[in-house]
Length: 302
Image 1: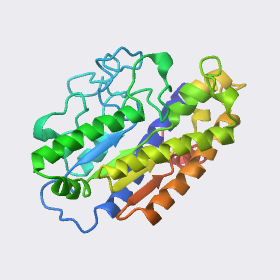
Image 2: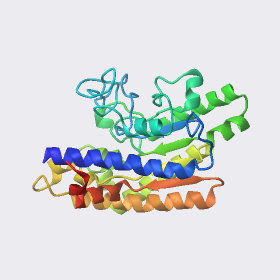
Image 3: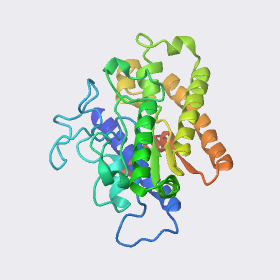
């Protein structure tokens, strides 16, 4: 069963990459191909799925800078929570970047003009999410780091208007919320959120905060943004081990809570596109991608 789950999660990641790339093709349509990247820069926000090393030097249990992580990566472990490339590494390659997008902790000088990865393992929309694992950079902290980067871009390019025009051409991917359920709401002995909020109330609270955070991202220049929804956390190995009666059946009470969040997130994306000038936000349906994998797993091979 462990092997099957590993395959399913791998295919989920690959499918998400393919979907994001297809959507990004729409975002960059009309730009020259040439020999360089399709876009001038790529900015990444998220959690362990896309953390490329930002947690390496902080006091956290959520680290991946040791073997067997990176066992298939050139140079070995880097802080990526995978054997080799992460989804954002693949996206950067297919967008035409010569190098991977550097983590914020390593980005400096004119390197930031190509983009920065701010993701942090255990991070969530809520600041307290993941705190049982030690330090991490919540989405608010990632946004503050991005704001620092924007100030640096302004200094490099000379003025705010030039910087704003430059950033408007860049691709942004944002994937938060998974840990707000897995490492918050559904850990009742550690967090009080499940006692304070019903699943509907919690989804509303999360979306309210997430909306404000995404608007901050927009206010600091982001225009082409792919928002990745929460996956089927109730089917994750952790959820199956702790909450499934047989270790195989997905936990519906967890998945139903995720669907409440995703339904609201779709509305946020539509609202932004309808009301924010030049906004091109896209919702990436990670939940249903996983449903397709569960239903048609044989078609994906072994």
